[in-house]
Amino acid sequence: MKAEEKIWSALEEVIDPEIGVNIVDLGLVYEVSVEDNGKVSIEMTLTIPQCPLADEIVDNVKRTVSQIPEVKQVDVRLVWEPKWTPAKMNDQAREEIRARQTLVQ
Image (cartoon, rainbow, N blue to C red):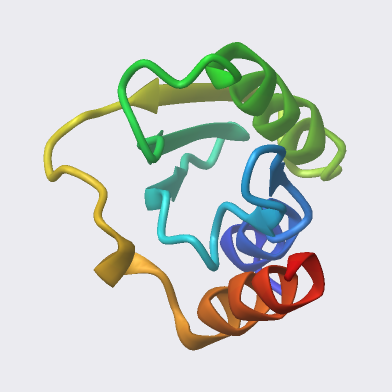
C-alpha cells in the first residue's frame, strides 16, 4: 500500500467527537499530499469555523498520521473554502448519523 493510501486509511480512524463519525466519511479532508522526504500536507475543514474541538481534531489527525512509518512530518491546514456542507458526507456517514438518531429517540 502506498503512503498516501495508508494516510487516508489512518484518517478514517479520526472521529469527529461531536458527530461520532470519521472525518473522511464526513468529507472534512479535502487533500492529502506526500513528499518523497516523508512530509505530509493535509488540507481539511471542520463542520463549522467556530468548532470548539478544532485543536483536538487537528491534534488527532497529526498523531494518527505520524504513526505511519513513512511519515516524518505532518502539516495540517484548516481551510474554510470550499465551505463544508452535509452534501460532502458519504453514504456511510449518513447511515451512521441516522442510526445514532434512531437510538436517541
